Structures are given as structure tokens and as C-alpha cells.
Image (tube, rainbow, N blue to C red; front, side, top):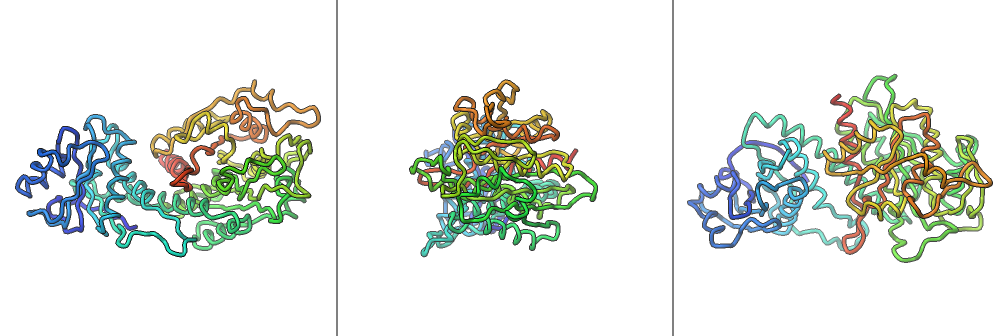
Amino acid sequence: MKFSVKSGTPEQQRSACVIAGVFEKRRLSDAAQRLDEASGGLLGEVVRRGDMDGRPGQVLLLPAVAGIAAQRVLLVGCGPERELADSRYRKIVRKAALTLNETGAMEAASYLAELPVTGRHLHWKVRQVVETTAQALYRFEQFKSKPENASRPLRRMTLMVTDRQALAEGKRALAEGEAIAAGQRLARDLGNTPANICTPAWLARQAASLAKSQPSITHKVLEEKEMGKMGMGALLSVARGSRQPAKLIILEYKGAKRGDRPVVLVGKGVTFDSGGISIKPSAAMDEMKYDMCGAASVLGVFRALSELRLPLNVVGLIPATENLPGGNASKPGDIVTSLSGQTIEILNTDAEGRLILCDALTYAERYRPEVIIDIATLTGACVIALGHQASAVLGNHPPLVHDLIRAGNESGDRAWELPLWEEYQEQLKSNFADMANVGGRPAGTITAACFLARFTEKQRWAHLDIAGTAWRSGEKKSATGRPVALLTQYLLDRTSR
């Protein structure tokens, strides 16, 4: 899918289709009004007779309209004009993209960036058109013998601005949107790949491939033997039940001075999570291939960074392993020693994500990070608390938590803060080790973060629990690519300070 930005009037666009909005009560948007005038009032007549009244989700395709250069006109319902906010705008864009993809219009000129979204400027609207369109048209059919793609899919979209002075801003937004969309696509592809293909070694090869294609990115991989010598007993305890060796994948993006302290992103990479000895129920266990979506999001952010060329240093750490039952698997009651030297009583082997993350978080200290952000499909409790709309964010540095929430609001990839109070630490007490790896059912998302907090006390750190946002279940089951947009926006915001 290719995007471009240009200026021009809608009636003069020689395109397979021109897209314009219609508000409720049959009010034409500015672009639709221009098309109406050029067509001798045809659009106004169509809406007056009830074919389109502007309700959200409505679409009307008009072929070969006299007086208009485009082969088709697509009218999209936008709802009440004064109530056009972020979520509805994305739904409008998505509906337009899906409709075009089904009609055989392989390219289009879109005037949706002119719509007056409450509190939003042109830059935001252009980016959302790019990201939302790319998300809507995403398909993962690599393993189908007969892919079900549209015969004449939408391949090119021109985002129209009516003011030539806005072209430069529109092109900057387009570049950001395309970079984020590329990162999301990579993260979704990685997440959707089945676990018999996406092993820790395969994930390491994807990181190597990304680094090889981008001069600004370097990579290396720590093997189990080296991790054992270092003392990563928590991470390695998770891998014991699997025949697939664990990996610690390390990526470095160098866009700033050598001495500038980096942002460190740590992504949970459990390529399949059966729960180990504390085995999960069989229903929907296939979705546990998505337990590496934190790792996928880190790779997605590095993909976006390679295009944006931001003046930052960023490190990505991906502890990758499977969590399976086996004769050598960790057992409830086992005690392991982490890289930090702290001991952990494993009360539940299905609370494995925090075990691999804690060693990676300790390893991150050697980079003298400015901040550390870990990203993990960590707790089912997060889905109960926040559903599938927002990721949870917890941390020990309020400015960092605030910046992540703000980046989520700007990007539409939202997060919500949960408390990280000292009182919750009581739930992690162990009679036999420094801590237990679970704190019981109450406040499960919070106590998981409390566990990680014990390994980041010297750092500015935040934790993103993406268990409810990293993938969708049901008929449209798929990885979502979240929180690539949130994290990339956070990095963009750091460069604008």
C-alpha cells in the first residue's frame, strides 16, 4: 500500500475514486460540497432523497458522476459534525478503506483529512488515515495454499489537502504514519506466525534480518550457556521444559551521540506458553502463540525507528523462550536465583513472564539507561481490569508514566495507569525465598508489576501490560500490533523536547 500527499480540488482529481464525507442531517463536507457544485447538484439530490443521510458507517458509491474527473465518488457517513472525535474518525477511515478494497478501485484520492475532528490538527488526521488504512487492509495469509485476497485490492491512496501551504506538514505526518504502519505490520506478522515456526531461534533470526537491512541497527544474541555463566537463573528456569533453547536477543539503534543514555525497551518473548507444569486449560490455548507480542512490539518499534531516523539511542532486549511441561521443567515450589542475586520461589509456573523479564531488566542496567520500559502480555487480570481497550501502565517514575499515557492518547493506542503502592508488595512474601513469583488472585496485574519493581529500584522504569490489547480473539483473531504506535509516539515526543 502506497500513500502520498498533494493539494487540489476534488472535482479535478483523475482517480479511480474520490472520497468525501457527509455529516448527519444530510450536511455535505467541504469536499462533498465542491463535488456537488461540479456535478450540478447531484450529490445534494442524492442525500435529500434519503440514499445517504450521514449516519456513521454509511457508505454510498456513485459511479461516473458527470462533471467530476474521478471514475467514482465514495460518500462516507460521519455522524454529527460537532461530535466527530478520535474513535469515530478512525471508524470512518476504516470503513472507507474496506469499501474501496471490495469495489476494485485500486487507487483513490481521499479528502477525509479535511474533516473537523475535535481538538485535532492536520498532522494527526493524516497519520491516522495512513495507520488506520494499513491496519484495516492487513491480511496474514502466508500459510494458506489459496489466499483470499481481493482480486483488485486498493494499492495506492493520495491524501488531499486543500491548502498548498499544508503540504510540508502533511508529508511529515505521512512519513511518520508509514513508519508506524510498517512497524505494526512487522509486529502483527511475528505475532500471527505459529509457534512451530516462531521459536526463540527463529525470532532471533528475524532480529538479525532487521539489523542486516538497517545500518543504524546492530544486534547480538546471548545463548543459554552464556546466560548460565552470568547467573540468569530466573530466565533459564522457564526454558527447562522445552527442547528449544532460550535466547536473549539484543538490538541497538544508534541515532544520537555515543555517550547519550539510551531508552531501553524490554519485550517478553514467550513464543508459546502452555503454562508449564501449572498447565493452562486447553480452550484457546492456541492463542498462547501471542505471548511473544511484547517482543514483537520491540521489533516493530525498531522497524519504525529505522525509517524515522530519530536522534535517539534505543536498546531492545528480548528474552525469548517457550514455556512447556517436561521431565526437566520447573515445578511449583522450586527456588531459583535471578541475575540480581535475589531468590524467587516459583509457586506457579504459569507466571513465567516476570521470571524472564526480571533477568532482562537487571541486564539492562549495564546500558546506563535514561529510562526502561518493559512490554509484556503478562496477566489475564489486566483483561478483567481494563478489557481490550487500554493497556495497563505502572511504574516507579511518574513523569515516565505520564509521558506514556500522553503518547497513548495522541496515537490512539491508549494506556491507563494502575497503582504501584508499597502495600501490594506484602502479597509477594515467601517463607523460603526473597519473594514468591505470584501474589494470589487479588490485584494480579499490580502484584506482577510489584515483582518487576524489585528489579528496577535503581532505574526510571515503567511496565506496559498488553495482555488485553496485543491480539483479538474470535472470528477476526489476529495480533493487533499494539503498542508499537504508543511507543513510537513516545520516542517521537522525546525528540521534540
